[in-house]
Length: 143
Image (cartoon, rainbow, N blue to C red):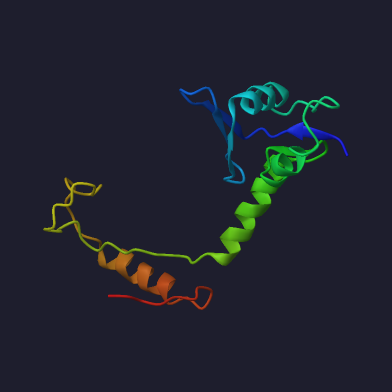
């Protein structure tokens, strides 16, 4: 099997000379000794490059492949991310927050509406009700 380095690998050297390898697609983290970090980071750069034959020890390959640091040469990682996104999108809830007025007195530091004023028109309120009660949405209305 031919391997290539993942486009989503990140290399972080420590002060002691060892290093940490992180894969942004899988979330895998691998801590490596000084000697291994140098060898692995050299073999896996640049991103997406084919892995030269015998570049890494056979004992290390299953760990790198298992963490997604190495992928099959024909692997389209962007397509994998897109497929995962679509799968999660189908599984996740649709949340709807209706803000009929900006007249909140909580003054939360993080609030994005803190300096806005106004109220929702009756027409927009009616449209929100129609949307939220639509049979195409499985909703739980929380007050």
